[in-house]
Length: 253
Image (tube, rainbow, N blue to C red; front, side, top):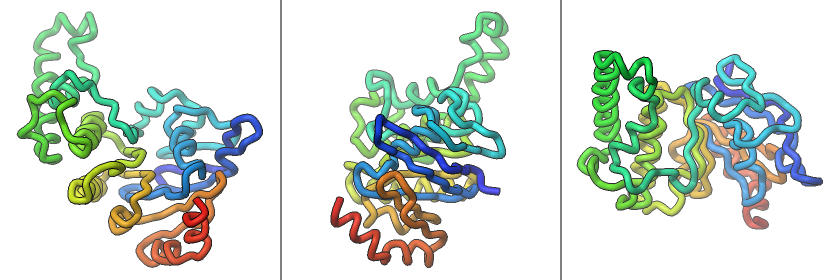
């Protein structure tokens, strides 16, 4: 059974069916890409999956649980974390502090705060995890820098790091390499492949097909709120890329 399923999802904005009966399957430990021209419904779809928008009809099932129209914080507790096209960092705080605030600290609870041994051990574990993640992302040398001084690509890596601090089952990403230099874009995508190999499922939207296609396992193409076509595995993806309908919508978009 896929880790994530959507079934006949519909989202209306007035008379516009922004998402029109969309069904997708995202298998565990895969990197799945959704593409399509502007206005095709991609961002609306991931907002429905992550609870930032409410569906008018249809279902979202994650790890066997129906999470349709749950609040974002509830979906987060199910193990889904999302990143945004523009990283949502606290820019005046340091790189490592941006990671540490991603977890609830036991010392913030009035009762737990009195038990120093409990929260101090947890704090040490969080700091150790944060530095391990920074090392994985090759940001460890910047640990004490204000997040606002990082490059755009480094900010996107840091937002991935913040997601990893929550130990997610799946990360949903909105254009993780948009506006990033090609060399760093490849570094980001290679990190996503490594995360997949460690058991984290990745679902992403991205426009830079020349860079991203070589890294993904499965591909969906959206157009006018619907799934136009899909491809699974290298052969399936190649067939989608060579589909005249896909070329036509991009030339028209």
